[in-house]
Length: 350
Image 1 (cartoon, one colour):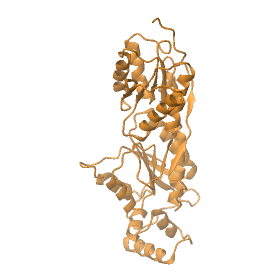
Image 2: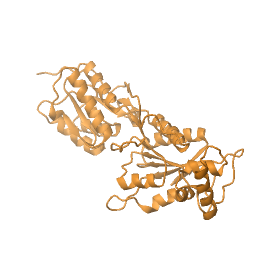
Image 3: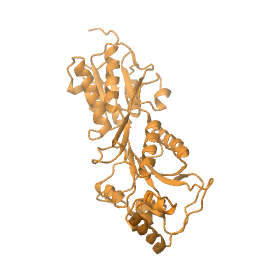
């Protein structure tokens, strides 16, 4: 676990515990503690009684009298440039909002998909006012736990479609798939394959749908053999590219639905002594730092990861203050970043 900021969490009941005892949200309990007037008398009474009953001790004030808030960020892992971009966006937005952030890698689950009590109890014990989940697959019991404890949360690029009413921030994945495919079409390619992600994920399905839509708009028949799924796994993408190359009529271009998978595609082409873009044009998706490091540099669709994370943090702050977003789904636009991995199809004999 990594923690940014310098304030320590004091012993004794936290504000989250008090809020749960009083049957209110953490922001509402905070308003009572801080003497705010915009709280109903009955609600104020319940919170005040809970404060006395539990022996709540107010934390010391910092930075000119304003106590820092605390939010949790749960990321899929900490060993990728993807997570680095998300952390950067959250850190900057949290600094502007005067918040501390606790970062955890992964939301552990016990067998059967039930929430692991240890992590969730720690979330309550340290008094977090809200949670950001990045690439998380929450189960119904976990959604229920968060709702029961009245902890506001926002999903950053959720893996699966969230239940109705859940707030999430993501990229315009469908439009990104359209843009990538239209770029290859504009160069003169017609035999365009796709190495897609997971069949069940929001992002994977949307990017694949964008690819199919662009082909249809161009009047091209979709070839089923040109659609391969690699589950956002670099090594599987390498195998899928080799399968495409072994087709009787291999593609001249490929849209790879993540930059990490594009590295596997590059490896497969190198094994067959094929050059990018002369023998195969390649477009990725994400615009991770790796896309600039490979040779040739990868043409890719940029999704604004840091901006998505910062937007999610700002939405969470409003929810912590008792406001609901006008829309539960916020999508930030994607754009094509043209580099050296795409070109017109080469003339080939026969």
